[in-house]
Amino acid sequence: MINAKEALQKLIDGNERFVNNASIHPNRSQETKDSLLSKQTPFAIVLSCSDSRVPLEIIFDAGLGDIFVIRTAGHVLSQEVMGSIEYGVVHLGVKLIMILGHDNCGAVHSAVDAYKSKSLDTVSPNLKSILMEIYPAIEKVNSDLKEEDFHKEAVRQNVEYQAKDLLIKDAYIANKVSTGEIMVVKANYNLSTSRVEIF
Image 1 (tube, rainbow, N blue to C red):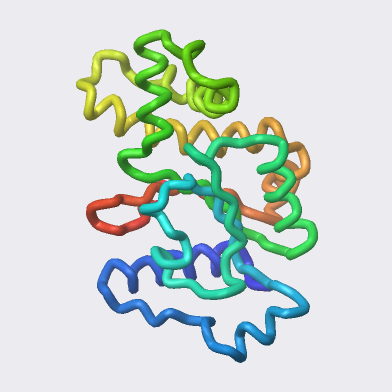
Image 2 (cartoon, rainbow, N blue to C red):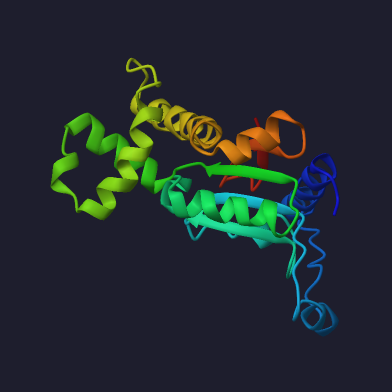
């Protein structure tokens, strides 16, 4: 298994190919499919938003068995999400965890709208559980910002918050990070440029 820095470089290199319309579409052959029948060895765990405009294997020019993908609206944490991350580390030996946000995130926009209009109680309990996980990020945004800038900053703060919250709530992952065994990185996908920015 490759180390965290090598894994991050693979993601960066793959995204660079995608940005430049030079994707090589690796690991999609019948031979690859056959090799994955009995086991998987992904080199990265990526927690991202469920947004259909952010297909991870495409934007990182990766293939079958390359990325252990976890997706929720707004890339918010839950016990199931943290359990999935731990599974990737414990059972699959992955050294890199990426928390990936993206521009114009609908979940963040909904959370901002509900936050500003104080209408959280009008949504379903399931949606409320997502929006409430984004609220702490919104509270860190300067309220004097113009609406567009406020939304952009809320997206960034949500990535920061979810990464920080992971290390607060998940003692196992926090310990692995503190000892240098694994790495957690924060990033954002730009829908206009297709580029992933590492924070």
